[in-house]
Length: 505
Image 1: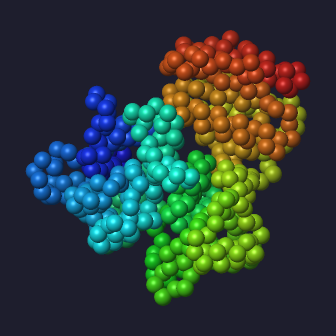
Image 2: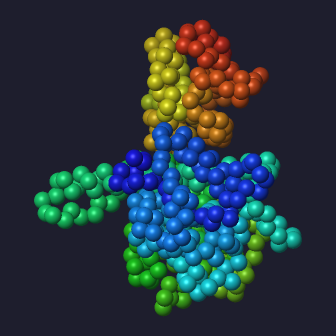
Image 3: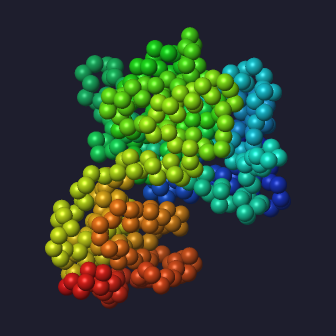
C-alpha cells in the first residue's frame, strides 16, 4: 500500500535501460542513483514510505503486456526520464502514451536527463512530446553558453555534480509531495462524497483551497524559462503558498479565458516570467498564451483586484519579432517590470506578500514578555515537549512553533520579526531540512525588525550524526544533547535571552 489510497504504486518511473547502464563498474546506474535519492527525500518530507515501481522484470517478455498496462493504470504519478534513447524507444513512448491517455498530463513529471534534439523526432513522437510540453520539467544538464556544449549531471561518478543534483532532487520532491497529497486528499473527499451521495453516481469532488493559504498565480511560460519557473514555484510551496494554475491550461481560446479568470480571481499576486520566445498561440488566436495571461492579469491589476509582477532575466534578448514587440509593450505598460537575477525576483515576490502589521504575538511588543520561536521538524514534535514545557512553565516565556502555528510564510516572518529569541531543534530531520530552515530563519530574522537581533540557538538532539558533532559557533548558542532533556541544557540559552532583553527575569 502506497501513500495515495486507491493506487498500487505512488510513482511509476519510465526510462530507457541504456540510461541506467553504470559508467564505471561497481558504481550505481544513473536511474538507480536518482530513485534512491528521490525515495529518501520523499520519505523525510512525507514521514513514511512511498511505492515506486520500475519495470525491468516485465520487459523480459518482449512485448507490451497487460501486466505492464495494469501497473501504469494503478500508479498515481508518472515520471519519465527523457533522453535521446527514450525518444527513440517504442517501448518507453508506449508507456508515456498509455499513462497520458488514461490519466491525462497533470500527473506526469518530466526529468530531462540529456539534452534532446526535438527537430529529429518522428511525427508521432513530436505530437506526444507536445502533449506534455507544459508539465513540470527538470533538466539534469548544463549548457555552456560560450561553446554551446552540454554537460550532463552525473553525480553517481562525479562528486562535484552532487550539490546541483541534490538541489534539483529536492525541488522535484517538494512538487511531488504537493501532488501526492492533493491526490490523497481528493481520494478521501471523493470517497466521503460517494458514501453520502443519494444517487448512484456521485459527482467529482475537487480539492478545496485552505483559506489560510495565500494563492499566487505563477503564469505558464515558454520552454526556455521552465526551470526558473519551477524554482520560483518550489520557493512558494516551501512557504505554504497555493500556486496556480494547478492544472494544465486548456488550448482552446474560450476555455482558456474562462479558466484564467477563475484562477486570477483566487490569487493575490500574479507573476509572469518573460523569455526569449513568444510562446504557443491557441487556435484562431493572434496572441500567445503568455501574452493572454499577462493581459488578463494586467486588467485585474488596473482594477486593483490583483497585484502583478513581471520579470525577464537580465542579459537575454527576444529571438522573434513578435516577442520583441510584446516585451516592449510590457515594459511600457507594467508598473513593476524587473530585469534582475532570479533570486531578486524571489525576494520581490515575498515583499509583495509581506504580512499585515500585526506581529503574531498578541502583545504588541510591550512589557517584559519574552517571545521565543521554536522551530522543529514535525517528526520531532514529541521530542521537543519537555523543552517546550520548561520554557513556558518554568521560564514563563511565550513560545510559538512557527512551522505548526503559522499557516503560511507570512506567519513565519511575522513571528520571527517580533521575536526575542529563536531556537532551532535539530533532531530526526536530515541535514538538507536543517540547512533550508536555518537559511529561512536567517533570511527573515532581520528584515523589517523593530527590535534588536534576538538571542539565537540550535538545540542538537537525538540521533547523533557526524554533521551534528561538527556544529560549532561563536555567535550562536549550540546545545548538544543526545540524551533526555534536563533543565541545565538550556542554561546558556536562557542567559543569552536575559542579556538580549536587558536583564529581564
